[in-house]
Length: 533
Image 1 (cartoon, rainbow, N blue to C red):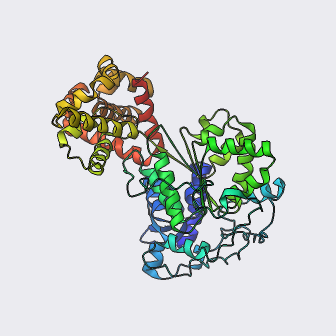
Image 2: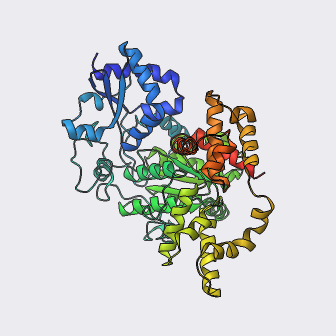
Image 3: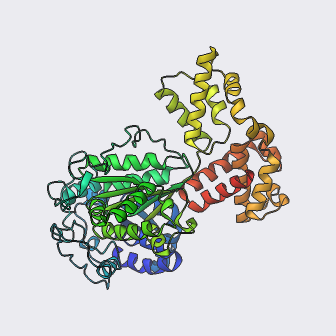
């Protein structure tokens, strides 16, 4: 069997071992490229997908390929752009449809002044998988299969960005049709309906990337490299003040640089506008405004849950934009499944693309954020003072920056040096009750871990290597390091007399798993939440 046949057979086994969503998101676009010395090279869409498949699904893929070949084998996931650059044009199989699949239907051009099609027609179109739908914009010619890959990358651009430039440049994209009374959108800057500009501080360059937010950052980068074609919709969720709005503005600004028309709106404003449109009987103008854009960015999407008129209108707007391959990016303080009042039809659409979570920053991330903030403010803060600021657990980046601002103002106003003692005095009144009345100690951490994982104290302190127990023990090491002032030696002594190098390895393992595995992040977040009951 050649590489393509081996991979197709392996996919049948992989499909039985992973969830339907994981298979659709990560495996359906992969192609068997080369088989050499029992190592199968699989081409995937981009670097992000290659890294994610290697971290999350390498064991599953290796087992499936080994069973197919009848002998131990290895699997390498490599971006197709890299493979094409190394060996020339891709084999025909890379652009061919899956075995037994029907050719993708060609979507007819939509007239400029066309009104939204009946819901039944849109539902039928949505039933077609996103990858099978032809890439292109309504009103423009649909490119032939493989046509984009034949275009050479533009200088200074990645393959994905170059592909985007050929398919949706401003010159080739049809001008959206506006109603005669389309209102503020006509002639206004391509950012929001009232002409407001994005926050210039919220860019990818100023976003501090750490273990807690790397997945969301990488997903946002992929979205701007191929808007409407990859991870659509993208929903970024996490607690207050962790950088969701920052990423949303960064995405919007990067898309604007590509010449796309972008609308940023909060769920509250969207609700107010639809209510006003219903009152004034201008719902058609409202729909024209939101459906004549290239990207819709909605902040705090959880607030549309339970609002019947808002949910109804957003449902149809979502369908319209998604069918037209327009990018949708949402932020929320919780995952869709936790939006109790949200209708199932919207919840399923929120989960349709990619969910990316942002967790509270760990110690290293907090320290990096404080260094960057101090530099931006032009303040020379000693490292030991930044360490004092960074050590207590902080659930919000916004809160962390506020604490630094308070310390700087306190020292300047009272003429105090920026030393650790000044940090303690400046923040004392703010967090006296929270930090003095209930400090986190080792016993509290162990109790939280026992409750989260259902293991005994004896198991945590013992030498059992059972998988669940070993993971719970490593989480305890990580939380003791993050939540208390205990040293590595003290943590090792508290966990049954373990060496400090074992504690370092355990903390590092947890950090790496949190970066790659959402379940690991959920475990740590749940145990941390138990500390704050």
